[in-house]
Image (cartoon, rainbow, N blue to C red):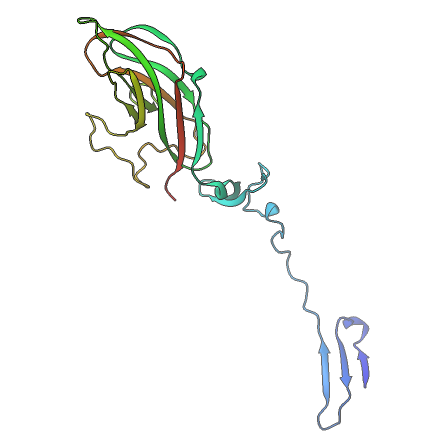
Amino acid sequence: SRTTNAPARARSISTSLMASCAIAPHLHLKVPAPRGFTGPAAAIRDALDYDNSHPPNNGQIPTWNETEQKWQPSDFASKHPQLFSIPESAFTNVTQIINGRVPILSYPMPVFDFAWVPYVTGHFKAFGVDLNILDPFKIGAEVRIGDPVNGQLVGRGKGTIAQETTVIPHFSSHGDPDTAVTPDNGTAQINAGQQMTLTVNLVNDGILGAYSFNRADAQLSVLAVPQGL
């Protein structure tokens, strides 16, 4: 067996003649491939199509941002319903209301990095008397997102003679009876990264009267339900 090296000008090539005979020689050539161009970064955070302006937090994964045309760290792995509550301290006491719509809550909701629809439930108590017969009357509520008066309706509570109002998810109205939420129609949808305010208005579901609201024991719970893809 013998090994020979190539001339100095081609040191990168070597041969090795293994034990063999003249009829069937075994010749091994060692030819390293030429060095290629520098490839893309091995680290994801150094890649040209990755936005590292906000370093990732524990548990985040890369997701595609169509607008920026780059990958970004995201809580996509946590894209599941998330619950938060609105305490009674966020409500506002009001007195001597004469009919009409009266706001008792304006609350900036948390911002999520996925599109979602609020699923609102809760309860509170408003009390008053009918101006004609001095009997308890029915004070209900509406929950809206965005504009306090014309924003999308997301919850409704009908007034009862017990003067306790229970709020449940509700999206349609007499003026727009066909409104409904589906997984991809965009109704009541709050987009990823969008700040949205939730408003609760008292609504007289009975006849003309004067009433008051005390925030004691008032509470709302909101389930952020991921929407779309």
